[in-house]
Length: 290
Image (cartoon, rainbow, N blue to C red; front, side, top):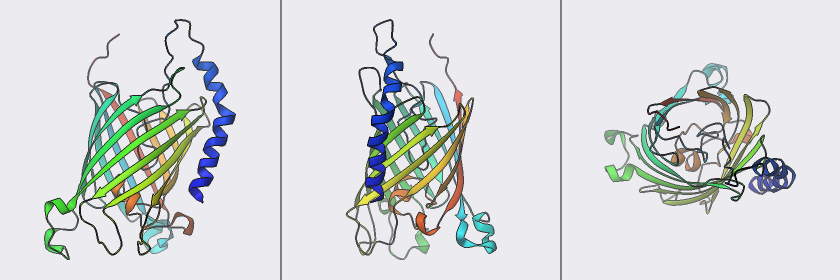
């Protein structure tokens, strides 16, 4: 039901807000397509990806942090005693192609990924489409602590996404994220190896520097015995020149697609909330052509 409600908001917003941006795009005197820029502030919406890619020769440093659950109470100082971080880098090979690598402390996962911007929204193209692929290796638990004989291939997972976004107006952007997650080894009593999910998210810009963001991932064909929940989050983006600071509230500690889409242990609407933040900083390593 939550997914259908968000889809309804998506469609309603499309009808109301699209004219403003169309007027802006059609103001071209050269006859060439006017491409949309800055559909989102950065490469992260809340936990997941956006359609944005780095420019050629640009390096993005990503630091993501999640505290423990707020409802753990005063003993855990409302989650602030716990900390989970992901440190990552993404490099723009071209303006449309980027590669990245990162490490998440929550489950000791190292992930690498590739993104490619297939389509760019313009006066003649209604959407931006980015393809995203991720390979992760989960090094937790240690081999000696595992409850079964665990091999390297058991730790590997793969993620494929299509990120489909539209900037409806200078203030409003929305995105759909059909997602496929494959985990080589799972507990067959509660999980399946191949998990499909649909994500929906968006941004509302409230001032030149401040935006409100949100995202939700709905999983399909989940076994009845599965203990995990759908991932949901809201946030505030503060954009200041070369970096974006995001304050988020979410029900997951996971900071890779495998973790937050398929292994979220908290229920957002029952108060299992994690305060956190994302910081991204861009460095131009190569001179841009004029």
